[in-house]
Image (cartoon, rainbow, N blue to C red; front, side, top):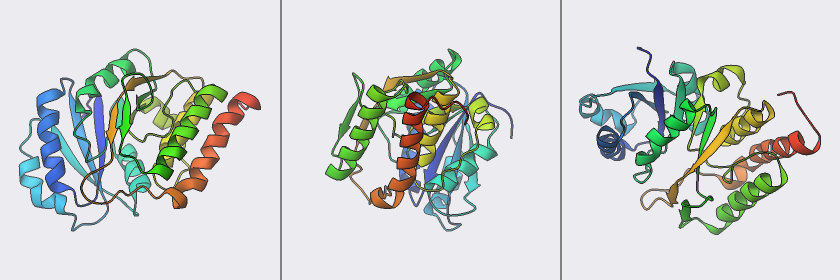
Length: 239
């Protein structure tokens, strides 16, 4: 696998037709050199029905088998499999934000170890979100921004860029959902590495069902939420 400056990890679960359309947007809109890592759970995932078409793009695409099940394990395997300077985790069904990926990479070039795609800063938006999920993510993000030293307004979004240096330095303990993203944010802040954000749009998916499991994943999100607060209030300094 040749080294590229940017890798884009996309966890997939039978979303072959969607990612084919997404790759067309990537090819037309992303200016920087990049590689895509599709992280999948099952060998019969329908993404393989589109493998020949996916291999026809002018950028490299790799398929990474999840050794377990679920998005957290899949994304962690993607992190381990890559060798780029930085990694963006991108949703398979997001046809809105591909035009900000170059901007996220430029923030990394300017010294950021995490670049958050923020729904809650000026210029960002979150539409159609179920009420309970909306209350939880907005409350967590609001309180961490105003009551901790975490400098971004959207703490819970899994769509963000991570530097390879951070990924190599920090052990990811999370095992469910997208808790790894909040964990890396809290640990990056404790290390006092630069964190930045740019506005992003988010809309509830119109097809299929969301894989966001609020109550199943909540304990691990709560763990890293408290970790983030303790960095500020209890002056914790070790990761």
